[in-house]
Length: 220
Image 1 (cartoon, rainbow, N blue to C red):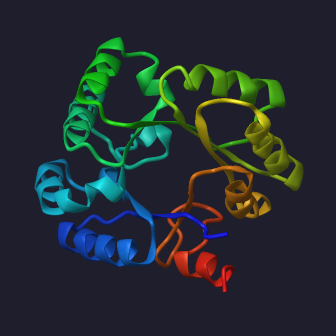
Image 2 (image 1 turned 120 degrees about the vertical axis):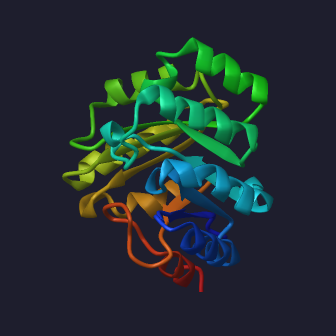
């Protein structure tokens, strides 16, 4: 099978971001642009600079509380999310904890017709089967693209998370584990139905992440 990859790009410099994005899209189907790595004042400039490529980009603006680098006020972050939605990227990653609390934001995003990837991360553990399924069922009410990522402390944690792919649903699931014990889930998820897996251009920006070249070597 042809593995679908999404290269995560975390650059603080707009010029470096543009260069990395070009390299990423030469090697990968899509790329994730981590806008939380940028200065807030640079975001509108970068959006204009890369707008021709946004149809192949997952746009992410992760707050510090969710493992990201954005440290501004939440209202400010939501304003930037609305701006990102207006550029109509391939997907706009919005945290479940954000979207479930703000009906005004949900209405606005629906109005833009931007495709949403609703995401949830557990940076400490992998919850129980019932907790995972309950979380997924709540998340899919907001989008037909759901991302659930947890930390695996052992192989059984990763296997438990991957069991989400057995749920019959119209929603597509991107689910895998961070950390070395769950590293295999980043590949196995593709065989179970994930539309893509996250990779790096070189150095991993998330625990256990493969590089795009490593993934491609598995195809040869």
